[in-house]
Length: 178
Ligand code: IMP
Ligand code: MG
Image (cartoon, rainbow, N blue to C red; front, top):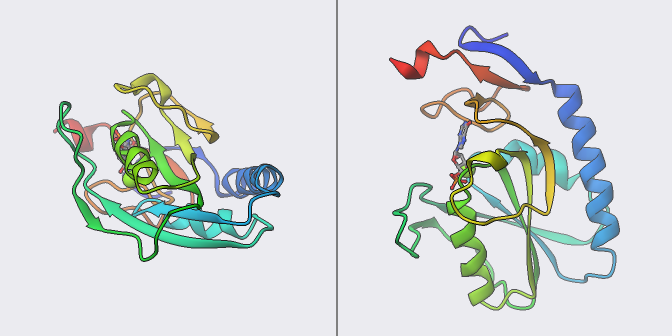
């Protein structure tokens, strides 16, 4: 285990099993769709996207977008750091996220993709911190629901580090209360 990790919350094996389960569900739910587009939010969703897409047995495209995650409460704008490479009009979009916390980022991204003419917009997240929501947002597919603990690994970072851990762990508290 990494020296900054207090305890492992979700093991690599549990993560991979969950990807299979979510992949099966998504394959079934989108079996009638001819325009499925997975949209990963950079950078945290990269490992999850990699494992999940292999478990979806459908024709699909994969796109990535990078948006600034901290936005003003009153603002309806989001800073797009990297936009999608292709149009979303008429597509069934499934946003792939590492964690949904306050819900602010996704709330804005969903609206943006709908405004651009997406046929449908849904969300799959590996981790859901439902208790932390400040805007109403329902993730359609959830890997694991957790409390408000700060987690790292499997794409999730602490100051841009630890994204490469194979598991999801709870960061030692003294590291971020200092
Ligand atoms: P929100 O839902 O708009 O609050 O933003 C969610 C984003 O905050 C995620 O995509 C992560 O980048 C970040 N985040 C939230 N909770 C954690 C955590 O426990 N560890 C690492 N990053 C987190
Ligand atoms: Mg993120």
